[in-house]
Image (cartoon, rainbow, N blue to C red; front, side, top):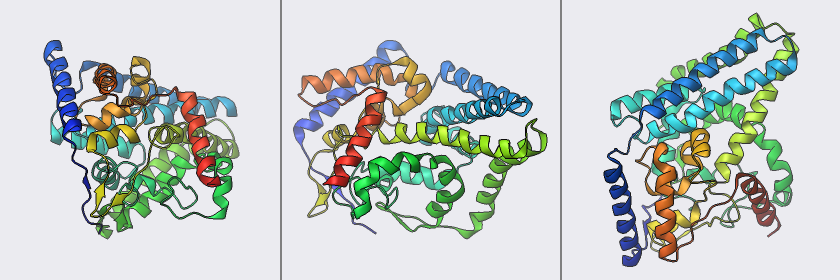
Length: 357
C-alpha cells in the first residue's frame, strides 16, 4: 500500500477556498435552497426512465436493422444519462440528502446499467477524487497499458500510434467495462492509492448483474424482436459502440486533455501544489454554465465544481460554476473550460503528444 500523500499547504490558496466556500454557501442561503437534488432532478430521472422503457419497447417492435439500432442506442443512452446524473450524485450522497436512500439509489442505478457498484464507488470517491491525475494514486489513470497519459507511466513503442488506435479501443468501452473490467476491478488488490478487498462471496451477485444485463440487452431481443438474429447482434454491438465513444470522450476530456496537468509526489510523499490549485489544474469543464449540458452530463460538464464541491447535487453546478470562475479569475487562477468538440480533439492531441515524446 502506498503511503498517504499530502498536499502542499498554502495559506493564500486556503483563503481563496474559504472565500469560495462562503460565496457558495451565500448562494444557497440567498436562494433558500439546500445543496441536494430537487423536484427537477426527480422529474428528469423519471422522464428518462420512462423514455428508456419506451425506447426498449420500440426496439423490440422495430422492423428494420437501422431502426432497431437507433432505439437500442436511445435505450442505452437514457440509462447512461440517469447514471451520469442521478447515479453519480447518489454515489457522493448528495442526491436526496439521506445517505441510506442515496446508497440504495446508487446501487440500483448502476446495476441497471450492468455495472458492479461497490468497487467503482470506492475507487471514484477515495482514489480519483482524492488524487486526480496523480501518478500511482489516481486509479483512473490505470486505464490500460495501451494508453499512455503521463510521462511517469511506462511507455512502449506502440504508444506512438495511440492517438490513432485509441478511438477504436473506445468503441469497446461499455462492453469491456460491463463484461470484463468489472471482474478485474473486483479482484485486483492494488488500485491507485487503495488496497481493495476482492470478496469471492460477492461473485454470484456480480454474475447476476451481468446475466440480467445480457438478458435484457441481447437474449430477450433474440427471442422477441422482429428482425433476424444476426441483425440483433449487430445492433447490440453497434449501439454499444456509439454509446462507448460518447462516454469515453465525456470521461476523458474532464482530466486527460492538453489543458489539464499531471502530477507526481515528491519526498516525503507530498504533492507540490495545494489541494485547491491541484483540483483546478487537473480538471477541465465543457460548457460548465450551460443548463442544457447539465441536463445530459450532470457533474461531468461542470467538473471543476464537482471536484471542489462533490457533496453538492449536479443541478446546482451551472450557478456554482459561475461563482468558481469569478473567484478564480479574481485571484489569477486559471479556470479551464473548452467546448465539447474541442475536448475530443484536445484528448487526441494529448495522446499524440505523449506518444511522440
